[in-house]
Image (cartoon, rainbow, N blue to C red; front, side):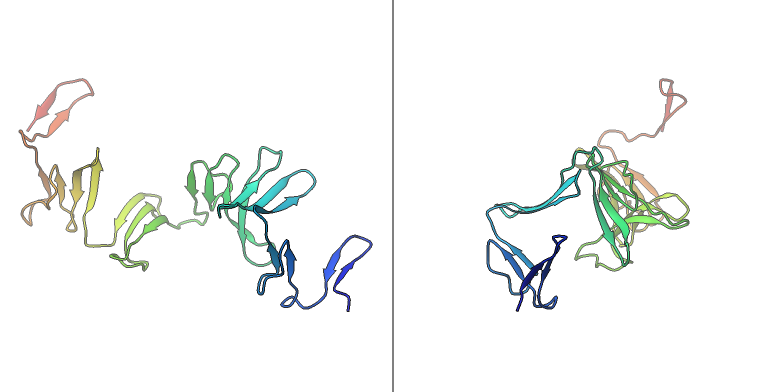
Amino acid sequence: ATAITIDSSENITFAGTTQSTRLGLGVAPHGTATLNITSTNQNIRLNNGSELAIIDLESGGALKLWSHGDSSNNEILFYQGTGSGSEKMRIHSDGNVGIGTSSPDRKLHLNEAASSTSNFIHLTTAATGATGSNGFLVGIGSAGGAELWNYEAQPIIFATSSSERMRIDSSGHVGIGMTAAPVGSDTCLSIYNSATPRIKLHNSTTGTASSW
């Protein structure tokens, strides 16, 4: 039986069903992989006549996706869906990553194109659980407001120079300069300073201030 056919247009056909046809380059065909390539540095090169892309498995084990064309608009696009599919993510030629946008403006740019729809980064751990009502959200609400949303009965802590500066506890009380929850159920704001804690109100950036 004929195993390989090359027609006048240089199209190559392998005999057998999709499940049984296997090809090995530099090694015997793999038991489950349709294409098995083995060498010190394995790579597949795709060339459309003007641009080049490489899928490479380096000798150390790293997988490299390389848009190697001459154009300044060398991007890597990720598509999903039937038919022509739709773009879900891209790595722009400047290294910016866009999800939901084809023109990422920062190192990571997340965009929700649907109107009246929120857009959040959802962070969870084993301690919080991993459902939609667990963990912490950072993003934009459906009305356009910036939101920090903690689903857990835990504080939101603000720190600088590796030291805590302020916290909002699970009851909504605010503590500045203290790591414990504000004292007293009726206390909304607590401020601590080892010297003399003060609140100052300025009438300009260089003007006089009133202290309490």
